[in-house]
Amino acid sequence: MQSRGQVGRMTTSHTTPADAEARRAVAPVICYPVSTLPAPDLDLYARARDGAVKVGEWIAAPREAAHFRVAAGQFFRITSIEGPQVGDLNLWNAADPSERFYSGKTRALHGSHLSTGDRMWSSFPHLRPMATITADTLDWYGVDEFGGRVHDVIGTRCDPHTHHLLSGEDYHHCCHSNLTRAYADATGLPVRDAAREVHDVLNVFMCTGFTRDTGQYFMKASPVRPGDYLEFFAEIDLLGVLSACPGGDCGSEHSSDTAPCHPLLIEAFAPAAGALDGWVSPPRNGYSGTHGR
Ligand SMILES: [Zn+2]
Image (cartoon, rainbow, N blue to C red; front, side):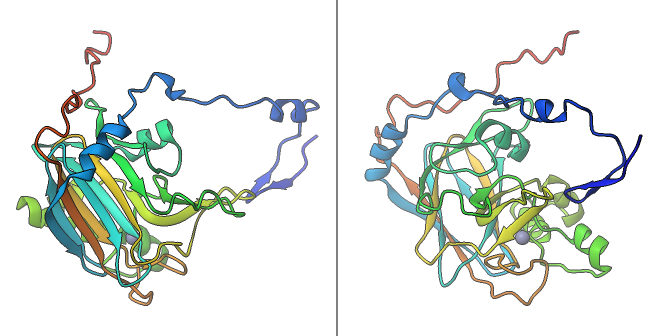
């Protein structure tokens, strides 16, 4: 017999089996145990960071994006200034734009939100660490009562296509468009070509999760305050682009000019000569690439 019911946002029309609870009670297993994942030497990075000197500074203006280059072995820091603000980060191998940040695999390896010791992994076939998070002043936040955490790799980026789908309107300062214009400026590509290179982001400072009842992606006002920062060690030569999201702290809405929006500061730091002795830039992934043929 069939009966219509409701599970979360979904209407059900199939009979619940007698052993449903037993099936639900099966314990999960971690998809990717990371015990064999090469671990970063955070102590070495900390010692190298101690004597590092500032070598670059950029500002992502509100509702715009900035592009920046950081050499392998340098650090870069994204800092909240002036007011609570979320940033959308894209990374490319500076010498080979086909190698770019792979948000989905990073999520599968480290979890839905990143913090110190986690790494930003690159796309296939390269699949290697592009950057390692070395400091996170919001690491105290943990998980809140709604399941919210900070710095997610689940939210893709706000974009004008979804906005048009939902509202029928054009808006040109979504993170996707900001990233596109900045990547075009960095590379000389026309914006239509640059748009194809923009990829799913690390949502810096953004506080997000999935609702437990309906499984929907949610955001809430970021706990970030001026002076907070997220710092990275560049494992390879990087081209980065950071958008100051039009949602500001993402506490109400994005894809509009109504939310208070603030700039984000990006800085690069170079360690002293010899400070990274023992470290080597990670090689590309070792898979043969033959796919069985
Ligand atoms: Zn955005």
